[in-house]
Image 1 (cartoon, rainbow, N blue to C red):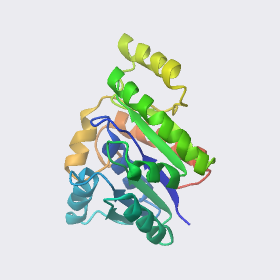
Image 2: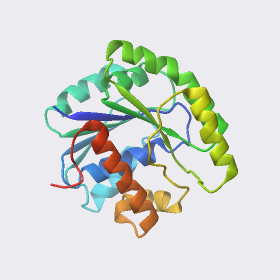
Image 3: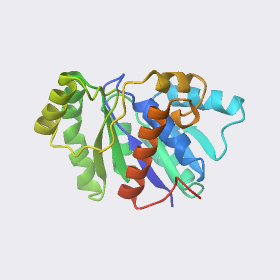
Length: 221
C-alpha cells in the first residue's frame, strides 16, 4: 500500500506543482512513485513529466491525471497497489477533489509563498482540513514556506503572522526564492539534478524531514 503525500493550496503561484514535481522526482530515485496531476487543464506537473519522459529520465516515476474526486479515488486505489508512494498535485481551489486529496493523503503539504495573500488563502482551507480529519484523524497537515527570503524582515513578520493566524504546524525546512526551481522544471528535472548546491541542499533536507514524518525511507535504497 502506497504512502500518499498531497500538495494542497487554493491560491495559484504558491509553488504547489514545483514542490510536487521535486518531491516525486526525488522519491523515484530509489522507489516507485505515481504523480497524480489534478490541476487540469493547466496540467503543470503532467507537462513536466512529459519533458522528463521524452528525455528518458522518468525512471520509476509514472504520471496520472484526475479531473474529479471520483476519478482521483479510483486512480489512488489502482496506483496504490503498484507504487511505494503517490504524490497528489491538487487544484488551486476548494472543491470536492481538494477534499478527497486531503482525506486520501497521509501527509498534506501546504506551500506558502511569502505573502499575506497566501496566508489568507490557507485560512480559507483550514475548515476543509478539519473536515478531512473528521473522516481520517491520522491525516497530518504541514505548512511549507516556499520562495522564502530568510534574511528579509518582511519574511520573518509573515512567518510570525502565519503562526498566529493559522495555528498550522510548519515544516522545519524552508525553500528559498531560487531561479533553480523554475529552470530545472523547464528541463523536466528536479533541483537535485541541477547545479545549484543551495537548492539541492534544502530539497534533501525536506526529504529527510518527510522521511521522519512518514516513518519511511526513500532517499536511499
